[in-house]
Length: 344
Image 1 (tube, rainbow, N blue to C red):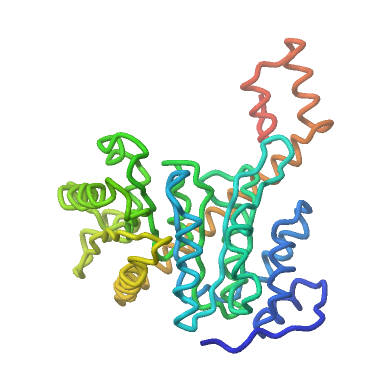
Image 2: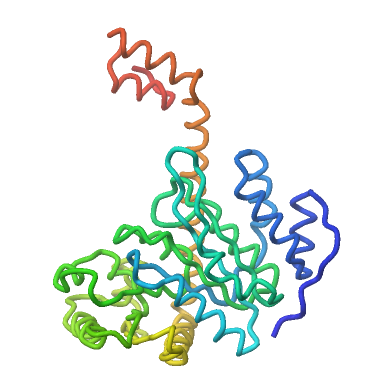
């Protein structure tokens, strides 16, 4: 178990906060994440630079799946199990934001309120704020904040918007896809793109009718899946897959009933087996490089997007371009080219 988190006054400087974070300060961690989520782009970038060299958590588990699958209940159950093992647990729970106000109903914090007094648990709810892929834009940096603050495991829960939630593969070491019986046609379920990213499947509400059947169908689909079913290998590309001589990970399926406290130990054991698999030397090095490349590309795309949004803010270039298009002086494609800095 890590040392108890420090407390006390903190500076507003992101660099000082990052240093205090390394001393285990929960307050510094909270303030850094608030800076990362700031609407002030300059403040957010300064905080991002300050946390860039903080270590990642020893284990990051991503939980994703459709609404109603029981992700939040499972998350609450996992926190309790990990705390019984004396692990400090960080949680980043992403909730959908209003497309009009940007606000979010951060319900996950309410559902996990029983863990609030526990100094070994840090729970942060984030609004997605329009970010695609089921995650918040600041989630990547927030992982480093929690890693720097000494949390042993971080649980990352996505919005719950459906099969497009695949951004979690870029952040989580182990991706846990949560499914529940009764949400729809099982044949369609097997076609969902979200099922291609799983390292571990969890069938929740395992005490209900149909749960065991769904578990068997998932196991059958994994067994019969053509080609590569190992997410980590597939993520590194066909060239690496062809040259890698090590074992391939076969996704596991675990039946869990959080309300009855059943299946939790089996699920944690599956997570540990996958963690050990990722530690295969050749694979571990390739995954670190791949993750760094994806983070560079993601940050570059985000920075370009921020710059473009500033240029196209109401009253700026966008207003002039829109007026030219409305008056027929400019076509939309030419307006796009000008917005991107090119000629018409």
